[in-house]
Image (cartoon, rainbow, N blue to C red; front, side, top):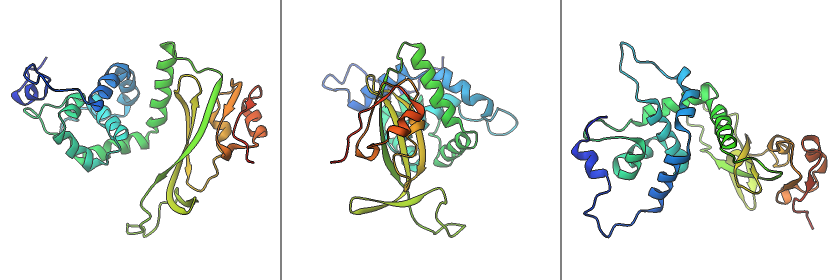
Length: 250
């Protein structure tokens, strides 16, 4: 084990701060430190991760994965995440960064790691591995699924090399407002709250179309808002024993 530098020691909780109260972020990170199967997730990425050679040694895989999760949990872009790690001791503790010995990975390094996951479709593999680990720990998917969708907004600018918008994204209207981007469709277990399926489409795809892909097939009940009303045929195509408990339009 490496000896702590003064910078790392200053980041740790100590007995001099008698009035200090742990923040909700610190409590959340402490929980994620315990329940996320880091070793199993690293095994999924390791075959594709750069190996040490004659060039600059790569940053530790688990550290990069932890930072990647921080970006998703706290909605941080690459540069914002780099700055947040310099600013927040709790984030550095979670990522295992000691400023007395090393720098925070820069925004370009974070971008390259995200591209690596995307190119090898490792996001899907990590999602499947988490589901497997949860079931092995006894957190099983039960017989009800709640389905929903949310829009992920993206810049609509054409000021890029191709002078065009991303072809995988589209504009859509919700209420009185227009959005450009993608849509995330999610299937969640109705009892445990665990997300067991996810589908990403362009923002203009109706919520009902990915419905069969959000069901695991053993449902007895399917819940959803009025966007999924009167979709008994789609539900039956994947979960024939499921009853339709979506909100019906009046």
